[in-house]
Image (tube, rainbow, N blue to C red; front, side, top):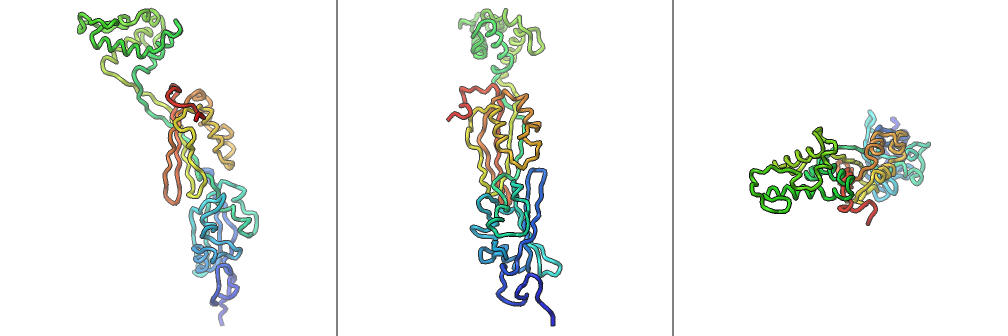
Length: 358
């Protein structure tokens, strides 16, 4: 007579009343680490395929031998305090088709929790291995962005203003607006006093005709465009404006952080200080605070990444406009949070509030 009793069936395969608690037992999990900075822990249960199917889809009524159950409010699939939901599950059948292994994989950034410390124990002391509330990945990039600015904000106007201030304090204030006003008078056929020109269509625009004492100062300053001097730079700029140029393009830095999280994560977007001017120091503080303890030693905390080298060197004195974070739902129960800071050293603090100001 054939023996239909095998390991895992205390009452025999053919007997009724056999539950997952009788035959489903947890075996050693698998722990992995990837270069994206994530640990995963795969918990595995072995038993008859039918019992595994019941366990994987059932709640408290289909718990395993140790009392763990998979679905429901306190089930390990959904996670609990300090845990994320599983990112995938799998049921493998043995060649005979009767026994199998059911597995569930979680992402974790807690190495201690992901490690296996011995034989399976009760869920109360094992539950934290299911995952955590942190991001699955966090990528920082420093990109470029084109920005159009008024022609009256260009380097020639700024340099002229600085040189005039150096000669006579405050004499360069509003220089761009003064140049714009002078060109407006010329286009209207008027001189610097607003008097109608006798030959407006024959008279060439000259900076000296509309500014007193400016030419001698600017003529003595070096050109910033490769021309004769700063005066000729300004005159060439005015010619471009009279030909219709209104704006010029600059390239600015855009610092971007993209986080991917599980749907049960407690991580939230950084809503504080939106539309505020951040300093580079404010940003590096955030980078350090949001770096996870599992990141490799050469992480942002250690300050050895090229990104922090750029921020701490070339852009150390920059101002940054923090924009509203973007939150999107992805596939497989994941969410993506994108944050951006636009660099603008010349951004007026009169236009935006400073970091930390309510």
